[in-house]
Length: 589
Ligand SMILES: Nc1ncnc2c1ncn2[C@@H]1O[C@H](COP(=O)(O)OP(=O)(O)OP(=O)(O)O)[C@@H](O)[C@H]1O
Image (cartoon, rainbow, N blue to C red; front, side, top):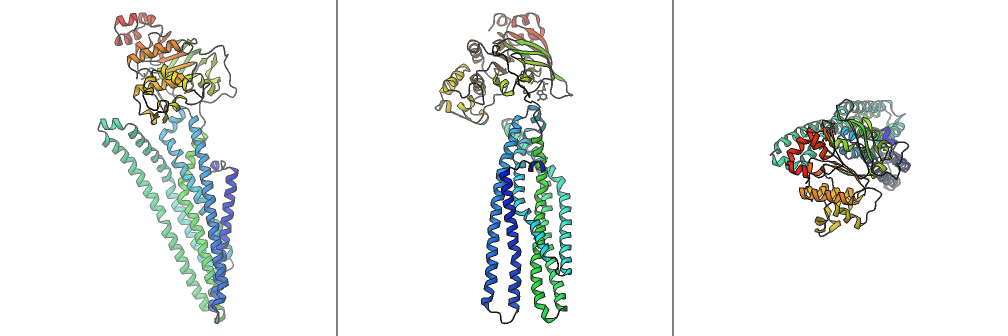
């Protein structure tokens, strides 16, 4: 919580102070009311009192109560403002931090957990703020002030209050101790629940096609039952707070009246009325003391879960991306654009795991095409993902235009690259927004540039056919487009940036053979200056590449042109002959 408190802005501190001042004011007013109760009681007990004499204390009492009500409204107003404002920037900070994370950090938390941390956990902090300022600050202020008022009154009455407070504190401590460990388990299980829901919804078609509803249901049910069980446990614990508090305050009233009855009984006749009045006032103050502790107890309903949430939010905020911007970024010689060199690159996903890319060395001059082929899991995607620094190499170095990628400012490096992932990702909005996506040296894109990119990516016709053209809607994940259309739009998005280097991570496999061929021809003609790194499954896609690297279990087992590899490399021959006939391979396709 301390770390989160440091994020409170000056303006928010101002509002917190105002909320506390209004709380003090309202407590002061409420504690003044019993004085008038006492006056009215004495007046009523005195024979010959006229009704008119009661008006003045009664009017003051009503006035004080109205002012106290107004102060409480102001406290609520400031509490809501602070809570909303604080959580808005906290959520923004968490979101920005998450966006900075590399794949390694995202994997460390998992996506569902990051979602829960950005939503549920922050809402929990917001609740503490609202409740804390409205209720919890009021509790101690009221308790301390009211204790001040009753000190010096009858010792027996005081003891009754002390016992009530001790029982109260003991009960809250026991409940807290029982509830706290369960809260962190509940948050973890909520992550799990989110993860199962997310998995089932994204894979809904597979779930249906395999009649796996019952299987997914069972997985969900197990997690759901566990969360429900723990939530019930905690809620039941919290539910007994109220009746116990009521029992404590009723018991205290009973004790005060009982003690009062003895005190008044033993007193002289003349002292009885003032004593009775004292008892009524003491009773009001004692109730305020108990109420003060009761309000503090309310904190303990929210606090355990909020502490767990705060810890989880801090874990995200404290973690810095393993892919960092260099303190002194370098820039490349502008005369070289698009040169890529891998020097003895080795990569492992975690320190102790096996290398998935081993000792890879190759060089692509500006405008050349380098292709990567190999069986599934041979490390092709991993290799190309190292260039835009989605991960950092474990050994060796990658140079772009003669500068190590780790020495570039990340934005500069990524401006040089047009990346088309294996699974095309489109964002909800419209086609325009997806093409003019992010920042690049071409931003903002003109419509003409967008159409040019679409034409090159063989997507012009299907966008033209849509009534809204560039303004056509794109659903979340691009689900209102076919797989091939999504892939072509993703290619158009990369081309529109006019990058120095294009990375196609198996982007051609979703295309039919004809589109694949036309697209490659167009790219060869119109993007001559761009260096292309192509991960592919089909030999036909990469036959014309200047350099082909054959990968097997992360190692380069062959390197050369199609002709050279076909003549000399066994692994390449195996892949090639499994796909095309000898004639097609020797004369190109
Ligand atoms: N995020 C990850 N964490 C840990 N291991 C991974 C991760 N991604 C991939 N791997 C492992 O790295 C190896 C290489 O995977 P990669 O995706 O690079 O292969 P690929 O040749 O591109 O395969 P495909 O052609 O099927 O896409 C595989 O053994 C895979 O299990």
